[in-house]
Image 1 (cartoon, helix red, strand yellow):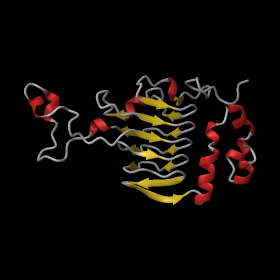
Image 2 (image 1 turned 30 degrees about the vertical axis):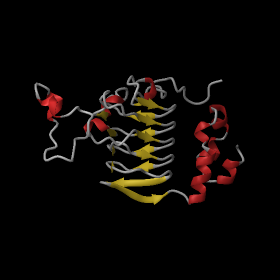
Image 3 (image 1 turned 135 degrees about the vertical axis):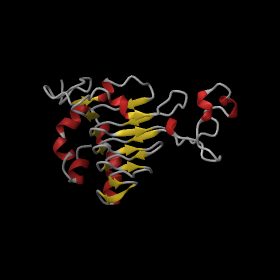
Image 4 (image 1 turned 90 degrees about the vertical axis):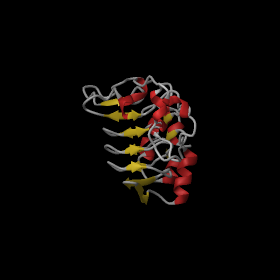
Length: 211
């Protein structure tokens, strides 16, 4: 039985192609997208990969985005390929052009590498936000429009600004831990469907009773 949208449907809202379940459009094996995560772009919602910049295969970093995330138009991920060496007098990447310049160092040698970029589940990232390399955004977090995220974002917090700072925590610590333990996004879709009213409410005990 089908519940809600089909996660394998590129455009789950008929007649509204600006909404795209992007796991069905991404071809780069180093970009991993969870079920039901959508990108909203009225110009070209199927070309989310153009928003993942400097993602060179020889660098080897991954962009991992969880389930049930909402990504607004123009959200951009800067990957580790954008980084330049900082410990010398010049930051210019002479070696990438070859013809004798490659002798100074292999491209990967000494390049700053901040690891994979990870976005948790049920994360909302606002219009034209920029996520810098190696950042982890926790489950349930919200990133305000046009923010530049340069450091990890804890679960269920609201971050905004440039550089993005914590604007507020969405719930008390004990509630956040309970939500992370429940992890409703990992339930099978029939169970999620039966308990949608609890998932979108703020009644923790009612949600716990669904387990």
